[in-house]
Amino acid sequence: MTFINPYTFIDELAFQHQRILQLFDRVLASDAEDRDEAFLELRRLLAVHEAAEEIIVHPKARAVIAAGGTVVDERLGEERAAKRLLAELEDLDLRSAEFDAKIEALRAAVERHVEREEREEFIALRNEIDDDEAARMADAVQAIEAIAPTRPHPAIESAPANLLVGPFAAMLDRARDVISDRMRQGAH
Image 1 (cartoon, rainbow, N blue to C red):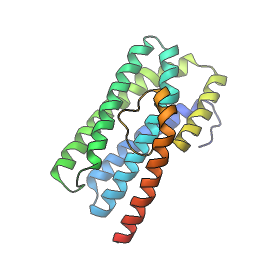
Image 2: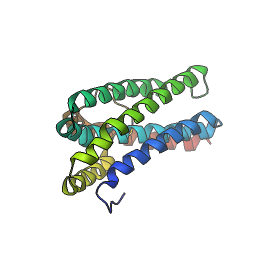
Image 3: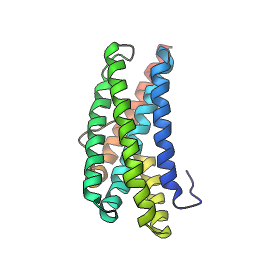
C-alpha cells in the first residue's frame, strides 16, 4: 500500500475493517471449498491488521488521546478475546454447527470492536497527530503488515511482545501457510 496523504493509513485500516466484515459474510455464505479459502483470508487479515494496530496505532493512541490508556486497554481486551476465538475456530471443522456459532460470535464481537476503535481511536488520532507523525506511522504500518504473523496469537498483544516474538511467530505462520496451501492443493 502506498500513501499519498499520510492520514490514509487510518483510512486503510478502516478499509481493512470493512474487508474483514465482508470476509465474515463470505465465510458464512460459502460452499465447502470457498469457505476454507475465505476463512484463511479472514484469519490472515485479522492477524496482520491487529499486529499493525498493536505495534503502531495503540501505543500512539495511548500516548496522545484523552483517556488513551483506558481506550487502548479496552480495545486490547476485545482483540485478545477475538484472537482466542479465532484460534478455537482454527481447530474446528468449517462445516460444523459449532464453527457456525463461533464464527457468528466472532463477527458480532469484531463489529462492536470496529465501531469503538474507529470512533474512539481513529478519529482522535486524526485530531492529535501532525502530518509528519502520520507519515511515519504510515510507513511503520506498511512495514509491520509485511512481516506480521498470519495466525492468531492470543498471548502476543503488546507492542514489545509483538516486536520481540512477532517475527518468529510470523516466520512459523508463513511456513505453516505454505504447507497448508500445498496440502489443500494436493487434496483437489
